[in-house]
Length: 469
Image 1 (tube, rainbow, N blue to C red):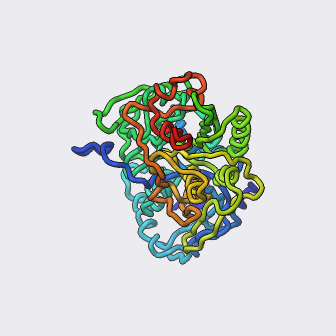
Image 2 (cartoon, helix red, strand yellow; image 1 turned 120 degrees about the horizontal axis):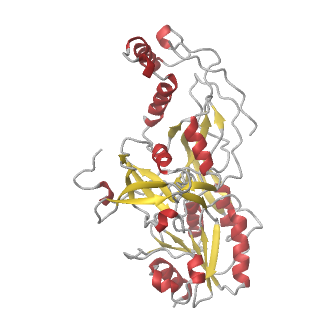
């Protein structure tokens, strides 16, 4: 009655809202996330009853954004270590029939499997693949690392990798799961989500009229994404407002890594890193050189709403501004810590600078902000960041599914914990009600009063701190 498990293959080379609506709560700083970075050389060992082949190399050349509905479920600088955990090569009857290769806790599972296949009234409804996927999802969910460590079906794996391609179809909102809520972490400038008025902190309550409280983050993302030109209707919860519906037309979305402009009325360049995608450090280097040629005498490194990306790019970006020391520390499950150094000979910029962050700054963005803050290279302005401070490693299973597992934690150079805490700014500045984050494109095209019209108090405060006026 049990499904035969395939032979191991060698890895390739490469509920109803409560009386107080949930969206009125203060969101915790620990938001789950996902971003590919580097291979893990040291990691937790698998259970002794599993065989582990050589770990795959991480997929490189993939931008950071994941679950871009673009929904980006985030956010890292998070490592995706590619490893496969195939089951035994022969069929596995389980301990119910006395096989000793599995722990005894599996006995009730196989008993339940047999009971369903022997006694369930509608045998045609028993889909062995769905049953196995549900069991695996339940196993991983039982860890309790909601929205972070999780199971992906083959279709969900494919969708998450498409999200890494840099240009996908969706609405342009980055999403994360906070407890049982599905929260918009940030929106992509110029995206359908931004044009529809969505903003960071909004909670998605339903998609096309269907409540989503019993779904996973990946399932919610899949229900929002779709073909360009089609519409999706979201019910949104927002602090201080009654729930409301918004209809959004999906589109093909591409997220630029870096943009910049001289702030009108100053000689300060606002350089925005949208995400730490592949070659972000090189793009930033080019932007810095162009800004200096344009006469910039100071820099605002804007990492607001940056969900993170490749940790290697975070190292590269930090290395442009400091000539030595540590970018971050990583600590594994055993407590072993190692320092990741600044790349020597890459520092090109000594202009005075400040860093801007907010709740939407996560993972790789937090690494850079923390590194520059600890090095005394730049003061940090804005709001406490998202608090994504773990490496999420992806392990392939034999049927094309995968488990995503938090394996390594990041610390700032001085040992400050990012996970659950975020980076606390040196100067705390809230964005006023009705204000919005202004982009370099708007600064360039909006004229002398562009910053005033946007009422971007965080950028104004950073500019004042940098220039003294």
